[in-house]
Image 1 (cartoon, rainbow over the protein chains, first blue to last red):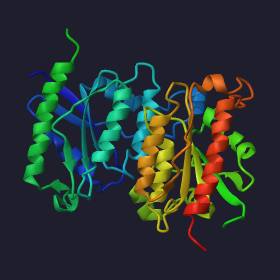
Image 2 (image 1 turned 120 degrees about the horizontal axis):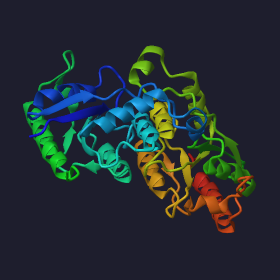
Image 3 (image 1 turned 90 degrees about the vertical axis):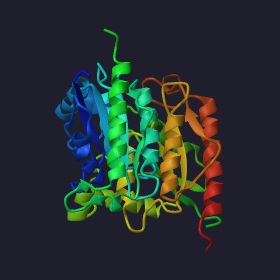
Image 4 (image 1 turned 180 degrees about the vertical axis):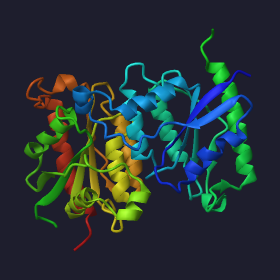
Length: 189
Length: 191
């Protein structure tokens, strides 16, 4: 299989984030040939405002994230659910890059993962994110879905390690499916 | 509550000056029933991106507290917002995410009506349904119908003054606000 360079985007900004823990463990379960690196952070993005875009252009960190997405073969989101939907900060990052020429999500393979303390495991954030990704013409992987519910029991809070073997197995399956999906939706050369 | 004038707060989801949604928000006072007074919410423009570590280390930023207090004091809210990428603008969602973490969470049992204006045929309706979903999670009381969905916004506002000139939209807003007044009086805590 060809080498695949994937960037991962975490929807939470806090240091102890469970989603960041998942993001960090992805390389350990990636299939051969797939490299997964964290995307540049959106922590310094202002709130989207077309007046900023029109007066001073796109902020540098917005371009940096967009370039990383463009350069990647695929994007994996690891995100919590806030109030039954997408964290505002993550949505704001998507809103910024969506306004760029050469919009970075066009034709981009995307996989979704979410972690939450409750039983639903962030399903609602994923379905809302799917809609925004659809609007942006991304190719979002259907299945397997990764919903990591009841997270407090699945991670070692001190080391940040995902201890739940079944969950590790699901993620491994998803990444393998994602590699096949990327190969399928890639433009014919 | 039965006859006093209601204090309703208007929140705009767009930050740009020439926003059609800000223009829509500005039309509301003239179209509101006598029993309702509208005021503009403080801006969420200066809110940091939500990060639990900030909340944990230095508490809620003053701008967040000011916004939450304005919501708590109001008898109801009208949220007027564009749709970004088939959903809620990140800036507005971030503001909701901040106050949702507060004790005495300001949206709890708060009557909310939604409006949107957008350039296309759906007029921001997808944003409204996502917002309904999020506000449900924080126990707001959502007004049902009539909905205010201003489609093809560029044709309905004056190009220079941004005045809303579409009679159908104006009539719908009047109907919604008078319905919203009755809704607030009905669902408010009994005195």
